Amino acid sequence: MSSLRFKVTKGEPASKDLQVISSGLLAHHAKQGHQRTWKKYCIFLKDKNNKTYGGIIVTFTWNDMHIDSLWVDESLRGKGYGAKLMKLAEKEAIKRNCTIAHTDTFTWQAPGFYEKLGYKSFGKIDDFPKGNSLNYYYKKLGK
Image 1 (tube, rainbow, N blue to C red):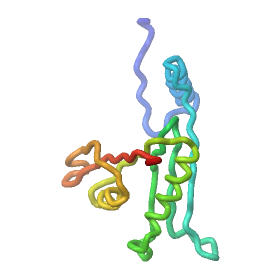
Image 2 (image 1 turned 180 degrees about the vertical axis):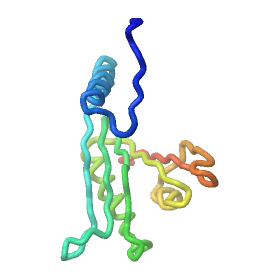
Image 3 (image 1 turned 30 degrees about the vertical axis):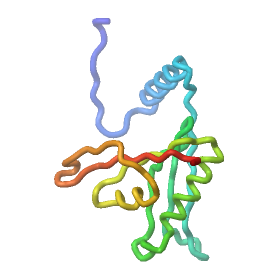
Image 4 (image 1 turned 60 degrees about the horizontal axis):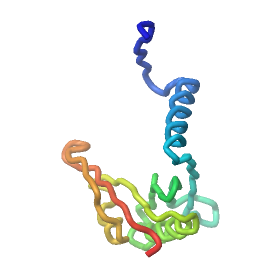
């Protein structure tokens, strides 16, 4: 093993290197009895001209729904569109036998929004970025 070396790259990794890492991680999960599968699911809020005014992107993994991104145009905030996007995604998650949903949000984004929808805080990184926090939330689904 003395011929091994550390090689630093900047930016995106080479696809062959990324594939080796991904394959190794997936094989490890499978050996532990957790064959890893994930599916992206997206719902968009659009007008009759197909202009996007909001949307939610989630990833289903095992029995979990991770909320990757949720956004509603500022002109439509406070009118229930964000909550409706969440409810539609949660309904799909339950159909897929998910029992947990989780996400993260910065202090200037939507902690109160998630709390109103029944999400509970399970962690926080203070002073990231400086003067703010990154907050982690989860919700048990299907109850």
